[in-house]
Length: 445
Ligand code: 2IT
Image (cartoon, rainbow, N blue to C red; front, side, top):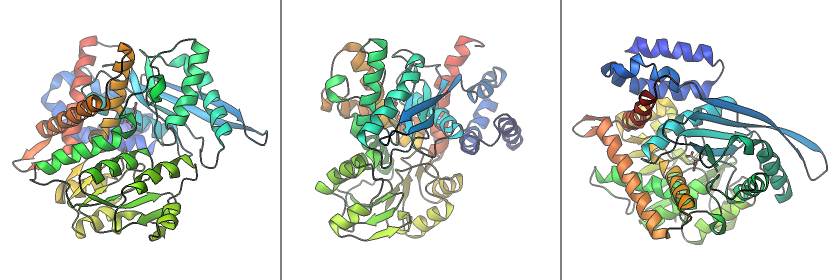
């Protein structure tokens, strides 16, 4: 088995040199799926894994735009259309200076499994640009988005590829992107999700990733006879995802004591609640990309250049970016009595951190925990197709049920003993089967 994983990885590394994040995510998936494949030779014979690690299509393009000083800037745009076996490519757009092809291939691969887990008919894709929104004016953001869409529009469509937001892309950016698409195509369709309420967006989509993550963690806690009441939770990030998590945790009586940004983290021992949660939206809209403003406004300690994982907590929920919680952080959390690491960011934990948490406490992987965001995107697509809007109660109830179903699927495929579930294994196998079976049905294509 070990050999099979190593042989497989050797080929993936040779074929995709230097793509570190992509190698990392493929290894994580392959390690849990290989034993399953060995037991089910039909997948092996059809070379399903070999086919799944190759994106169906990669689009890379120039994005020129003019800044406020009249200077021309050139960024690179991407869309990785990874897998359309069970539906149109679906996944967010990330605008962040760290964006590379490797990073988007990791995210697109991960998205394929995540979207399959949601139970909705969506394939996997991801895109974005190395554009840095920090410090940009509204006009600059708009011109960048318009230039980006003036190329992307010819590759996407409501039945082909449906992008959404991710880091650096929220409601405002989706507005600029959708406006340009609509103009170029002369069509009003659900080609993007995360749209504004008045032009085809779904209620609860802004909250969905965070709410879904908390619903998933709630299910996991339930298996241990626990709930969120009076729990101390450390979270990282301060953007849309962290906001939704903080909002739902506050409703459930937990106390969120940290937020973080690229500048460091804040520690609020009284809890991030009430208007402090609304203030997170202001920080995001300011384009300053820092949390120190929170510390100044609410007079709480700020730790420059640090991550919040040395604060004592019951539950840790990383909500920022990949590999933000490493092995040593996991050790500190476990030593301080943390009982669960629920990864909300995509691949937020390094393999060492995820393994430690799985063995010693409990761990839930991002592709299951954060699937609520794309799940409500799927519900937005359904509403757009029907030309109808559901109430927030209806969308929230559907989201809640989907997260319960994802948790159940993880338990079904990931149970390793009477009181232990390997959620990484469970999520990977559950996500794989649906996509793989569809690929078998299509033949070699
Ligand atoms: O990582 C993710 O699942 C997202 N950024 C959301 C994707 C979507 O299509 O809503």
